[in-house]
Length: 351
Image 1 (cartoon, rainbow, N blue to C red):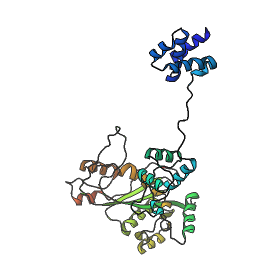
Image 2: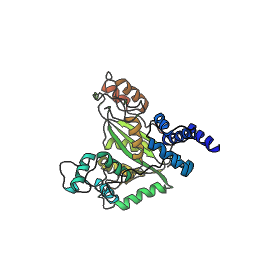
Image 3: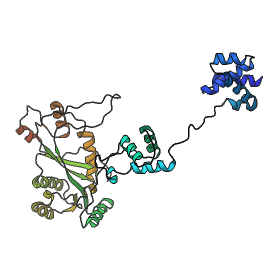
Image 4: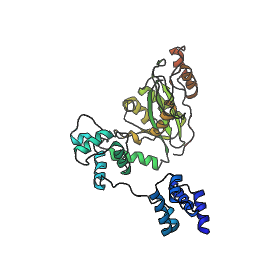
């Protein structure tokens, strides 16, 4: 009696189709139906019905659970799979192949067969093997080593200023961001699936090219910047004078790269006379400049995904003091409007 109720419960609640079908076969057999009738109603073979009944009589309810087999045995051994992953991480040039510079799944499969790693392999099987081996398709990045013979000393000097700010002054990171113009730049934004937003590729550079000279005060986390249409030592010296006027009586440690306007004779003379120490980064070591991280956010959230629409450019001009003019505005009006004192546009950030 209890067995019958349990079989009925399994036939009503089972989500696995194999378990459900076996439970129904057992239930119909318990109700006195013949094997032929059960096979006809369930649309299965008579041998299947007999096997289910016999196994249930021998093993009980364990017979209702499906026993999944492992499928056919693997044709590609574990050693071959490891070798496939190793070859995928190499370059075609390592195999003296000059027709292409990177592997595709089809080209890699042909190469594996040619090298007799495997007799045959499909693109889907190759994709699964690479995924199991944690080999994925990556974007190539570049890097550049510093050739500065004093790299270690300069790096330690900059990091020491970051880690232990001097008590007699403040550390300021300075750099230029640009050249800037209103050309359309691709970016990322939320939108409907498979409906990417499009940017018009054609544009007019009515406002020309501008440059942003910026300084990051590590003590307050604020950025001071100026937009100029030239990027020479005169503009850089003007930025330093503005910083000096903001922080009178304090020594300024200015971290900057080796751009030639930074090393101009007039710039060095003025900074020496006004208690400003220029701390130069190692050659090819601009990544040590803290302000580069802020420029990355500015580039991502402000520059990208901006259509070159004149009206939007005008609104952007009012909001961020930026790069372009309305087509009907004259260049004289633009030049008269852009220069001005540095403005705090960023929230304070801990040094």
